[in-house]
Image (cartoon, rainbow, N blue to C red; front, side, top):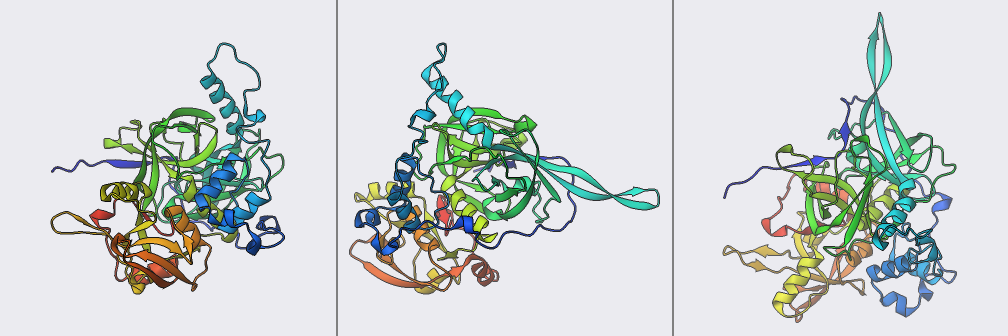
Length: 472
C-alpha cells in the first residue's frame, strides 16, 4: 500500500524569525479570588443523589441550568456548585439569549446565528506577538521590536485570562523560545492590551495569557462540554483568519476522537474534526456549539501538499482545555498526577461492547507506559495478536469505590489526587465480568514519568489508535 504524505499546518501566521529573550514569570499560587466553592457542611454532607452522578452528568446539569463551572477542579466542587446554585437567568435557554427583536426577513436559524455571534464575538481576541532583535545603528546596537506571529484566542474569565494555542505565542517554533511582547485586541474593546504569559502546555498546544489592564472587560465565553458531542451537530468558529478579525464561519462536527500531531511532539488525542472554514490566523479561536458555548479550541487543518483549507479542521476538546487551563492558572503549569496509561476512546469502547453483546462501562486500557505506576501494579493493556485479532486488556470500572463509566470520570478522579497518593482501582481483567480485582496504584507526576521512561521509550502500537493519554 502506498503511503500518501500529508501535512498538518499549524494555523499561526508567522511574520518573521524569533530570537532569545527572558521568559516571563508565571503565576504559581492560588489567589484569594480563586478560592474553591464548598458548602458550609463540607463534602461529607453532599446528598447521595449527587454523589451517584458521574462528572459528565454533573457538568451537563450545571450547563443546562446556566451555572458556570469552569473553575471546578474536582467532583466535589461540581456537586457543591450544583447544590448552591439556582437556575440562571443568563442561561442560553433564557430570555436574554433570544433574539433582541424580530428580524422579519430572516429565518429562525439565521436569527439564532446572528444573536449568538453578537453575544460571543466581544470576548474573542486577536493576538499578536513581537520579539526584540539587535540592529546596528552606526557604531552602536539598538533594540528593534519586530512582528513574530498572530492568531486568535478568547476571554476565559473575568480575571483577564486569555486562552490560545501554544504555537500562536511561540510562532510555531519548537525550541521553547517565547516572544518578548504579547498584545491582545478583544473585539469588544477599542484599545489594544498588553498581556503576560501565565503558562502553557506544549503537548496539548494550550497557552494562557493575562491582560495587564483588566478594566471594562467584556463577558467571558460560556463553557460547554465535549464528551457528549454528536457527529452532525452544528458548530461555529470565530477568529481572525489571515488577520481578518471578527470572522464567523459555520459547519458541523464531522468526526470525533481524532489524533492530531501537536507542536509539543506528541499527538493531541480526542480532537474534534469539523468542516467549518479554519484558516491561518484561526488558531486559538473558539469552536462553539449552536448555543454559543465553547466546545473546542481551533488548532490545525489537514492540508494535503500544502493546499490550504480543504474543509478538514481540528479543535482541542473543551474538556481537555478546561482541565489544562485551570491548572495553568493555579500553578503556572500542569502538575497533576498520572497512572501512566492510555485509554481507548469512549466511542470505540461502546462499539466493542456492541460486538461482544454486552455493555462495557468503564475505561479500556490501550497502553501502559514503561516504569509507570500502572506497569508496576500489573495493569494489562489491550494488544493485537499475530493474526490481527484484538486481545482486550483491563477495564477500569472504579476509583476508590466511585463508579467509572467513561474517560471523563477516570480523569477527574485521578486529578483530584496528589503525587504519592495510593488509589484503589476496580478492574475487570481482560474485560471479563467474572474476573474482577481491586488493584492498589501509587500515583506519580508526568514529569517524573518522563524521566523514568527517557531511557526506555515505548513507541505507540498500531492498536492504540483512538486512545487518550492519561491524565489527558
